[in-house]
Length: 174
Image 1: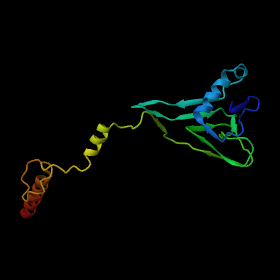
Image 2: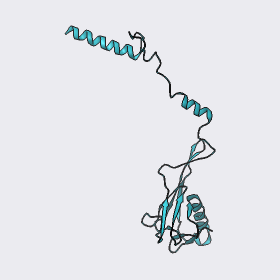
Image 3: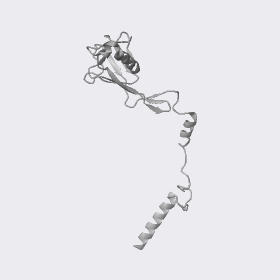
Image 4: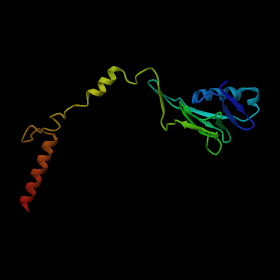
């Protein structure tokens, strides 16, 4: 077991020499402990949300929220620990990490994390379709800049010419 749960002190101790915590692994272990005979005698440890299906093999990331008095504590030493694979929040005074002398904890979080599975999010056909429109020229029926007298009905050039003509006629009447 990578974690030791102290239900009375509300501490989850990371066992030596583990320095990396993956949020999903921690969620799994919390659920095992909550379902144990000892865990059933205490309130829940945490809530977890996320992994919502956005379609196409894309899911939102996971957020683990420790209950107000629970914290994760790394073993004593002089090293940098990492928490990855989702968000870890909550805990005692909204701090999910308990202080341990000599340990720096790198908590990698994301406000809009997603999990993409199954390779590329786009098929080759979708990629080519998306990229094909990047160098499109504006059709002549919309803007007839090559025609000096702008005579194509409904084109932007013709409308601008008509506005200019009307303005010139109005100024002549004054």
